[in-house]
Length: 120
Image (cartoon, rainbow, N blue to C red; front, side, top):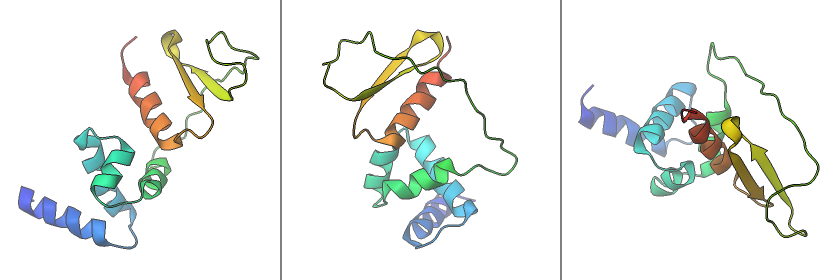
């Protein structure tokens, strides 16, 4: 397929009310290649971010869900106001991610995926 055909296919998929798994794969591939945040990509292409998040969360055929160990710790050593409501994730290598009430779950997922892909 030529670049022009790819662009035409992508544009026609964006206009569809419903996507199949193949359609979603084309859009998600374009998003990953773009380097944009999920929210930024959706906004640029006139899509709802929730629609992309839905397809990101769908397991692909042959992909198993992986569970990771989680340790819940009372209190925090972060320098946050005592009255703030937050979550703190401690990733491999001791990296920490602190999120506050109302955070964008899709953006957090992108951030964790990116940080976890960095070499230790």
